[in-house]
Image 1 (cartoon, helix red, strand yellow):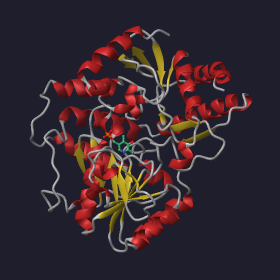
Image 2 (tube, rainbow, N blue to C red; image 1 turned 180 degrees about the horizontal axis):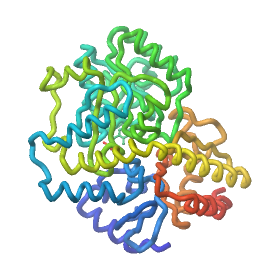
Image 3 (cartoon, protein in one colour; image 1 turned 90 degrees about the vertical axis):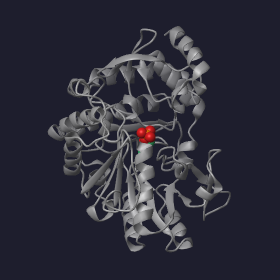
Image 4 (tube, protein in one colour; image 1 turned 120 degrees about the vertical axis):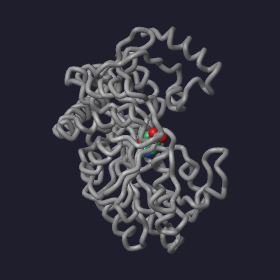
Length: 429
Ligand SMILES: *Cc1c(COP(=O)(O)O)cnc(C)c1O
């Protein structure tokens, strides 16, 4: 495939936009080469600026669970746009989406809409701190909760007690309130809690991780986490920006059978428009302004176009919950197909999957946390990514990202993908 036009567009973009992109992973830094510029998309397919048709396995990083340019969503947005795009005043559709979301998700009475997953997680943590009167939080290495300061934290040198900034611009002052635990490792959590007795407001986690590849939590880990949070009066925050309305109607809470105290959303809830949200039971949400003292606001929050896309999307998922099972089956089929090719070719690999999230790791050892994910062979991944792209298959351009299947992907597309790997696999080693 030829990517002349994409490459030329990238050169232009870099003149005016830092790195040529508005979100770093798009720039292909970890796989090398120039990014593919997209022109339009429909259903399962991307049509890029060079006229290539690609099967899309990222679905805009999750939101487009029903495929690109899904008619009911598009029509809802167009109809709404004709009535005016923003008012800065309450609209009925905000209540409609709130009511539907609350009816689909366990354990939430009220929901507040924001504009991104980042905002949702940032606000959820402020609410947790305001509610508990405590300041520290625990997050897990490799979990992503958006780019707000409190989450851009890595493990400090030898520090079990506090983290250090992993981006310039994040202060040490902020970093000292974020503690780093290891995914699937309950002991790392209890150690932190014991060392910071009575100081931890919240534990925030991706209930199925998707930002270090797809990593599934063990039952004992999740059960233990819920238990220790309850015992220590710590709020358990499920960041369901990725899993919400994707791993099932009720998200990961329902799929894993675990009740969270605060839940954050993004991606699917906006149907492809910028929406984030955080939700909890009445007792906690009552602390939020204007009802309570914890401040949070947004000029475009609850924007009618974004709400109409979200409402059309959730309405479809609510009315046709069999979509989740169908996606589950397709993803299992893909999993088995890819695994058998890699096994036949003798390529060391792990494939992790949960519902319609899946990731391929080129390593012999189980991938259960950030450090095991980071041990994957990135040179294999690079060749895999570019080889598959040559076959017309668009995968996440980083080994640390999950794929997101959408309902428009057919078994024929999956067979094409598996056949593609048959051609690519011998060239990986
Ligand atoms: C994408 C993502 C976010 C951030 O959402 P944005 O809309 O990109 O700000 C937060 N948490 C998780 C789990 C995500 O996958």
